[in-house]
Image: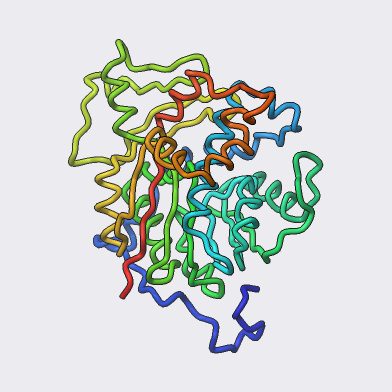
Length: 344
């Protein structure tokens, strides 16, 4: 049970967050998904559920190990910048709980993690309970947690989490683009975050950079491009490499990243994401391509030291290894964003 809430179901402390839940302007029925969308959502869930936990040796042998460490650094920087001691955190698409230690170091007060993949939630629960047998650095986390399986881009979460809200910080790492298969899912995602964050609360995240992906598509000879660790392929319907601004949802491509991802994803034009977020009472704090993010925050000594400890650019001593050029190109495919719920 979240700090500050009584165990008694009759307590006046219970109730939905103080933010009004905004509906789709065309009516709630338009939040319903068609069957094809649900099939793709299930494919994504099955892909991540099927991924097994790796031993430390297997993880270090990954062809994208330095990219994974860089991504961990970016998420750590975001958390250090915006999470405060005692914060209540909502982690959408929390996966196997890879960020639990980051939140613990931020000394948060409460954590709710939701993921569509039941296998990932089971692994997250195992990690939280200190039962993992690989690279588990601490047995006990300092914050209480609630973990649940569900599609946070389909279900109306303010009802499910009425006793847990409002939250101070919401995080959605490398997953928001899975909501962009339809306008209904994109709206549901943002409506959920808005309804659950307190006024002034922060929404942090990472997702593919549509500008970079479309630029690379247009530079490619065909409908596919990539390097030794990734490839992206668009279907024939996009053979002219043109995208209607009137329909910015459902622009699907297949993404393969060695030792990480192999499933359908969707383009998220950031200007549309920003405009839609504004409808749900968010203001943009910043958006930065990962290359820009690294350049900017590596100028700060505390984050340079964090990068050294995580090992993305080697450890500064015997280990002089760093991201390969191909991994660095993959990093360019992503951006980091921060939104703030407008205070009333």
